[in-house]
Length: 101
Image (cartoon, rainbow, N blue to C red; front, side, top):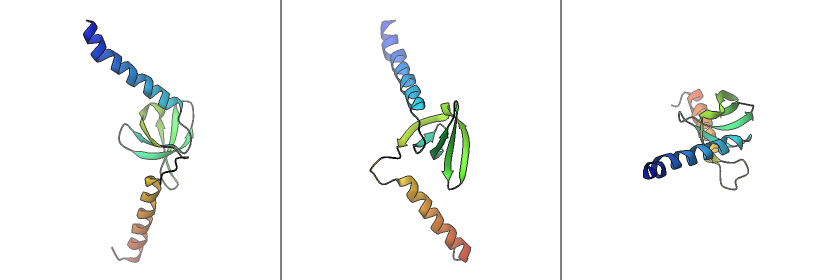
């Protein structure tokens, strides 16, 4: 019984506690991934709701509990790969408007 508790229940409790801390510490500007794999930046945090910006001027309303992990914070010194994706998409859209694609 003790081995079962040590190998199964304790790790699950640690994961739950870490997830609760993540949800409690969400702030606007955090880049996160949801359980369903949607990547975005936190635009606004309400009680149980997070507004997630997935593209320029496109926000999704999701439950806080749907956040799986934080990828980075707004204040990170590293280059933000998330913003680079937007720039690439803008270039593709400009090419599509010209009829070149």
